Image (tube, rainbow, N blue to C red; front, side):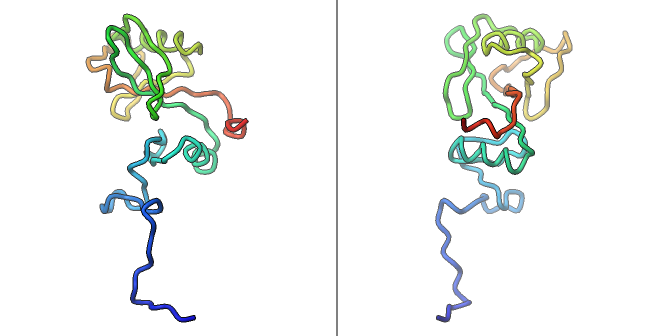
Length: 149
């Protein structure tokens, strides 16, 4: 009936968050699926989807990383699934956005390119030196109520 108040409660490893620093208190930092808006990480896509729905106002985005695969540029989900390939990828932001949009069969207006968290503009002189440091965010144009259908 009585509990020892001097003893710390046991917390499972799955429920722990942060890395021991003040900056990451309450943030899960080891999950495979990362929220584009707040950098919180989750173990599954479904957990990320629920987070987006209830924390960020129902916006639905897909975030992709870029890497080189032979002579191609490969776009992958944060979970590692290959989503597209672009042959002879441009190093110009505007042209690359168009190539990725074509590969994903969407309009370029739904794509944003980011470098270290900052969105890249379509300036014609804006050239990409390290294309593998770019992330792509695709606005899927729907709310999260239809994500689980």
